[in-house]
Image (cartoon, rainbow, N blue to C red):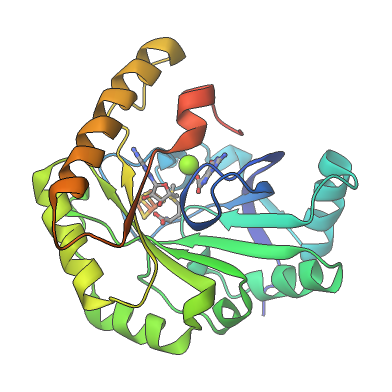
Length: 239
Ligand SMILES: C[S@@+](CC[C@H](N)C(=O)[O-])C[C@H]1O[C@@H](n2cnc3c(N)ncnc32)[C@H](O)[C@@H]1O
Ligand SMILES: Nc1nc2[nH]cc(C(=O)O)c2c(=O)[nH]1
Ligand code: SF4
Ligand SMILES: [Mg+2]
């Protein structure tokens, strides 16, 4: 079996800008390849071919030594994202090596694929995609994934761009009432280089989302979050 992992980015330490451990100091390892094609994907370079020359096939040991080079002793938490890292069997070696070194491991995935190593993840975010993405959720697969995992290690996070997305989010929340549930502001301007403009724009959207959830009697245990890193660094990569 191929023990190498296709890596596009290794960066940090930075804050986890999203979801269940927002604000946590973490390093990121971003793998290439995704089974989805969300129209608003802010990391489309992982699957659209535009960064294919930057993909590096690395072993877990090579990734660990780059993490150490970048972060020194200033981290104990690594987030694996993509793309969809759940496409890759070889991530199991990385999770094991990080744990052997006393590092906690988080995963960002959309919940379309299962791998056994997902059981070992400490903070696992499942982010099924709302209608605005143009993707279809395989709820049988999501049911099966959630049934295999421990409730205190997982969360659901739905990115919301509009009312239809919020209805979808509600449906997901109702299907899995015991899983900590987050809605996140969608960034609909992933091209702009003006962080000041983006910030202002996204704050208005955050307020809109807060108001919607506050009024909704079916969303009394929902946490409403911005995608924090975009409010600080805008659309910059590797932060
Ligand atoms: C780039 S994805 C990679 C992991 C995995 N493929 C997934 O979607 O969960 C990481 C997170 O960014 C979110 N995301 C992607 N594009 C976004 C956008 N334009 N605005 C807000 N969140 C976005 C995704 O929903 C996901 O929660
Ligand atoms: N700071 C920061 N937080 C993040 N949370 C999820 C990210 C991702 O792209 O998966 C991400 C990211 O790219 N940067
Ligand atoms: S599932 Fe994640 S990486 Fe894949 S296209 Fe959607 S947002 Fe992008
Ligand atoms: Mg991101």
